[in-house]
Length: 382
Ligand SMILES: [Zn+2]
Image 1 (spheres, rainbow, N blue to C red):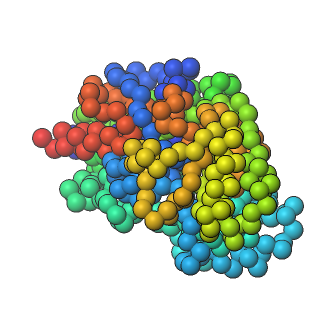
Image 2 (cartoon, helix red, strand yellow):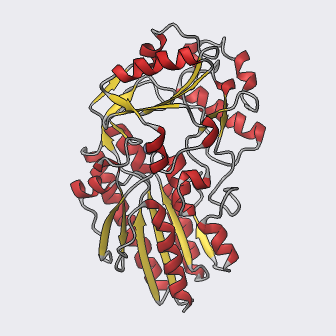
Image 3 (cartoon, rainbow, N blue to C red):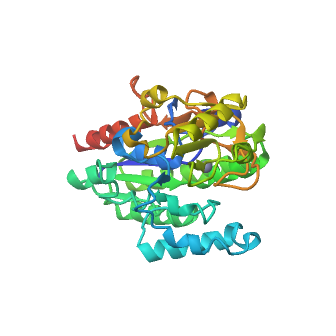
């Protein structure tokens, strides 16, 4: 085998994070900011793998309104359980694992902090593992493309640690059979959620990543005649400057959850569905008075390619300003130093791509990474 295309994914490695700390890999020749998709990793990762936006591949926010098909109906019987135990991360994490086994979900599944009594209003999107072929039903991923084109490849197992995945990749490289590899390095994201973008912990994690990637690259060069390297991310990270208690503001309306409205409170976005027009007007009025965020109109959702007919993901969408968290939310019960999921136009939302060759002019968004992969793999076939 002559050539290996090495693609390395680093979760949360924003262009602004790179500008703050730098990133030194000797072979990298070109670097560029990439625009992310509106939403969270549940939207961005499928956009990278499919090269399409959420309105096409249909993966946007993890939880969506579907009380008829909700797999969480039995959770209403658990809602009497003591809050001080079951609102904590560990018990919920184990319960998530049980649900995952019970329904045979192969995708990433967490209950986070969604209240048990409200879970029966929702269904969950990421039931299947999309890092294997046929993972996304509506369109193909780069892994489907590899299978169709007979490209031998290796993709990390996202359930395992970074060190484990790096070691497995090195062994794969020694076999000299693969032509394309997708190395998945997700923990920088967690470090920056915990410490923010400027602390030593983040700098040290970046230094560690530099060393690991340089190592894998050198190892590949020792086993292949030619190696190309691309490093890319899904979104950036924004340091937290404040928070709002949106749930309390909405509850002050004295509207009834489930009778008048249903809401999903993500860490930077709240989504509402309504059972009557009066409730819609009342909540709209509350949201319009909040200065720490604003309603995202349907036209703008269309422009960002995240609009869905039938209000599956919400009727009204409220997004906080960059750096402001909704706290508490259904995804966390404390204010953490770093977050993403703000407006994609904000600089801290930008993802990035580094390349050992020149990056084409037309590569501007994370949905363009797929093109880079295909082109790189095709080049080695010539
Ligand atoms: Zn994250």
